[in-house]
Amino acid sequence: MKRYLIYLGGVLLALTLITFAKAPKSSLSTSVSADPATIQPETALPTEAATPAPAAVRSIASTDDAVEDEPILGWCRSIADALPFLADLDGDGVPETVDLTILPGADDQGRWTLSLQKGDQVTLFQTDVPEDTSYGLWAGDLDEDGQYELFFHGDLASNDYVIYGFRSDLSCLFFEPDERAFRWGGNVQSSVFDGYIEGFEDGHLVISGAVDMLGTHWGVRTFAIGDDGIIGPVSTVWQFIDEAEADTPLVVTKALTAYKASVRKDPGEAFILEPGERIYLLASDGWERMWFETEKGKGGVLLLTPDEENTWLIDGVPESEYFEFLPYAG
Ligand SMILES: [Ca+2]
Ligand SMILES: [Ca+2]
Image 1 (cartoon, rainbow, N blue to C red):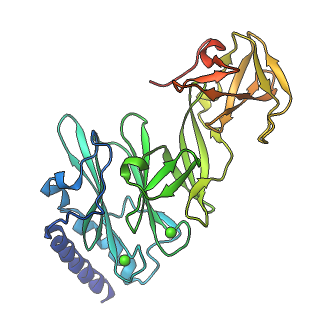
Image 2: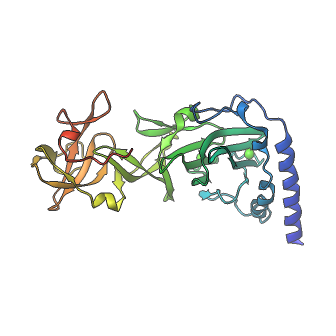
Image 3: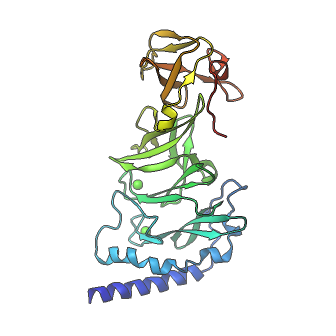
């Protein structure tokens, strides 16, 4: 009997979804657009994009959760395999539907459409991507204020990951360089953050991303939502995680000043790295400091400053003059 009710619930839900899908799309002011080169405003949405044909069947899984009267969302969970995903994201007692469709396009390109159905359908973003590209989608209440957040990451090109974040009030997450933190507000155009969501652990959002300093290095760092709603870094630095990277030392070609390793403001006592020395890069704050270890195991930190062309300087000299080769990607 119970299974029958679940099945019946699924059918009713499917009918409801189809009804919503056929409903006229709104031109809500909440609709957002991003880089016009890659992301189209909702008005450009092809009509078939809003038709979740296979989705209505898949939605039965999340209905099961509701019928069992268990919490649909924990603190945070992956929902990429449970789309369209139903949950009361804003706590008003009425479930919203999150869906992500990937429609095939020309030239081996697909198109992501991430949408939130809250009354009329709202397209959170659209972007063209290589087919069979990888992505992740999570829903959770990271700051435990009763409003659920959505986090999405995807690979726009080859290992070119970006992260989007949304709240159920449709505000977007964007990175505030001056604060070195994420804020809610703005629009999708300002929200893109280069990186990959590794997961959610101990109240923290774990992100990996590329640091472009003395080459391109892949690191991991944790973030958390503060009482002010701002998502800021918890860990001080990007810890480099690519082992192959760690095995490739940089060869010093010109004497340069380094400092004793320290995460404090004072970088500590200075010492000189001589030509011919090899250093392994370990971590960076992505802003001014790069931690390393010499081949003999001595730790240190290099201080860098960006110039007007956004290349890095050490003691006013371009970084490239100090090393045999800097492994920048692209
Ligand atoms: Ca709701
Ligand atoms: Ca929240």
